[in-house]
Length: 342
Figure 1 (tube, rainbow, N blue to C red):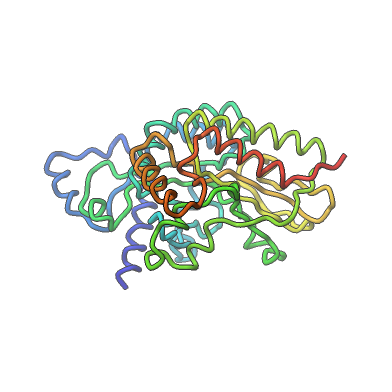
Figure 2: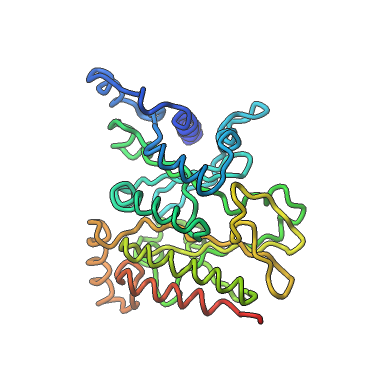
C-alpha cells in the first residue's frame, strides 16, 4: 500500500510539473520552510523549458498539443503507469498510457549534476546540428527547486527526464508480441552493477535486464548503413567529448509487415529502417549516457574496481575505461553486428 501511495504521489507530481509555470512558482522563506517537510507529493517544475520547446517543435517536429495530451487523464485513467525500478541504480520508470513517452528518475547526484551542468547545453546544440541523431530524444527535464525531506531521505526522486518511447506503437500493432528488444553494450567489459553489488541487494531478474546479446546481424543496404554509421560516429564523438561512458544501444526489431506510429518527424531509425533481407524493420537509440568519468562517484568507483580487479582479475569495467576507449569498443560492437548488402 505504501509503495502504491508513493507511486501515485510521484505520478501526480510529474503531471503537475509539466503544466506548472516555473516563472510564477516562487516561494517565500516561509514557503520554502513548509516545502522542506514534504515527503511524497513534492512540487516539480520544468527546467530549461524554452530549450526543450525548441528541440520538440523546431528540431523534432512535435505537435505541442499532442505532446501535452499524453499527460492528461483519459477515460478516468491516470496519465502515467509504473514501468518498474532498476534496482542497482534506484531509478524509477513511468510510461504514458498512450505509449508515447517514458519518464525516468535520476536519483543519483553524479548523474543529474552531470546532465544539468555539463551535458544539457551541448546536447541541445548537438541535436540541433544532427536532427537524425541516434541519441534518445529527451523532451523535458523536471526537478524540484527546493530541498525536501522526501528527497533527502531518498523516498522521492527530485529529478526526472522525459524521453521518447522507442517502443511507441507496439501496443496497437497486431504483431506487437513479435517485437524484439536488445540493450547492447560492448561485451569485452564487465559491469559493476552486475559484478560488484552484493547479490542480496539486486534481484536476479534485475541483473538479467542489464545487458543483452544480439546473436544475429543487422542486414542493411549500403545507403542505410552509411547514414546510420555517420550518425553513430557523430553521436559517440559527442559523448566522448563529454567524457561519458557506459552508454548502450537499444535495438528494436519489428516485423516487416508492421507500420507503427511515431512521434514527430520521421527520423529513419525511429520509423524503422527496412532490413535488406525483407524480414524486419530496425529501430535504435543510444541510451543511458549519464555516467561521466570526471564526476566524483565515477572516480571513487574506479578506485574500488581497480582494487577489486587485483583480487578478482575480471578484466576492464565500463567505468574504469576512458571515454575514448569505450567509444572505440562501442563502435566495434556496432560494426560487427551489421552486414551490408549492395
